[in-house]
Length: 169
Image 1: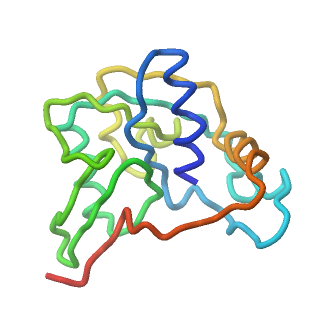
Image 2: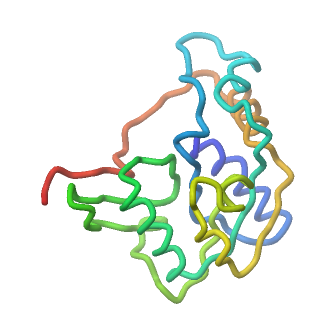
C-alpha cells in the first residue's frame, strides 16, 4: 500500500510543488482488510481503506526523521513504508537506516508522505507536527488504491525486507 501511495503521489508532488518524495509512512492499523486473490473491484479498496484519509506531505529535517525512526523502533510493528530501509534488532537497536538507498542526513530536509490522520498526531505519531512545511495533495488514500489497482494488470507483491526486526540482540 505504501508503494502505491509513493508511486501515485510522487509525480503529483513534483508537478504541483517541484519537490521529490522521499518516504511514505502509513499505519498498520489503517489497513482493514487483506487483498484477496482474483479480480480487484472498487469495493476491495473500500474494504482495505474505509477511511477518508488524504495524503499529506511533511517536510522534515533528518533530525526529526530520526524521531520517526525512534517511534518505529519502540513500536515494534512494521508499519507500511516506502522509500526507507530499516532494520531493528530484537532489543530495539537500529541496525540499518537508509532513505532512497542513502544514509540518513540529519541536516537534510526530507519529504515524507503520510495520511492526514497520522500527520495530526494519530497513533501518537506526534513527530509529524515538527515539520518545516506541509503540502496537501487532495488525494484520498482509498482513491490512490483504486487508481493504482486500475493501472495494474496483475499485482506482483515482493518481499524486499525494507522493514525488518532481527533476532540478534
